Image (tube, rainbow, N blue to C red; front, side):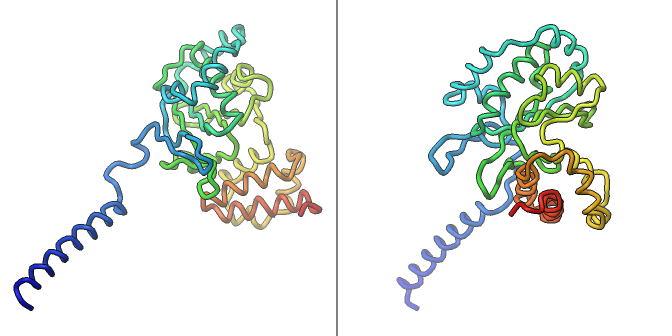
Length: 265
């Protein structure tokens, strides 16, 4: 190898190593996780901007999200007599709101939730706002996976916590009204959100062993049947579990659904 050839070889080798290292640096774990990043904005497959992951309320006051947030916040009239009673029961609680900026129910309910919490004097530090994806591959998930273990299958999902323990949640929309639903679940009353069949299954998964559940599927289906009004309720729950890598749960949910709706294809 002559000198010129050697020089060209080492120059090429230098740039190869540089490029190789650069490419692999992008694949290596980041020093800061997704959970440290706020207000991520992406463009969906249709070219529409969407927020994803943990966000601040300020992000919803920016275009284009402010178009629906400000309108629905301003147009909502708080049930002040009920909200006045809520001020005591909400004090000291923490709140997690899972939503999608792509979701019409989220666009309607989340501004109302914030208006009620504002009325009750809840500090923003007590509210965690998480945006989930509508993409098929990451359906109802966030980059930091704040939804993991939370059974978020419909949005918005307002979860009320007391000392880190969930005491109740409002799923998709209130049963009565946001104020009255919050009063029931924070006042020690029995509160059942929309999609009670899926809600009951969530609690069963948390309370019972998977092997026990799998051995008693017909009995489980009989327990859940009065609470399920449409096969799509449990299908939606199964889809979220499957996308989240919870194949065993998804299989159980679909088997229960088939026992409740045997004629459903």
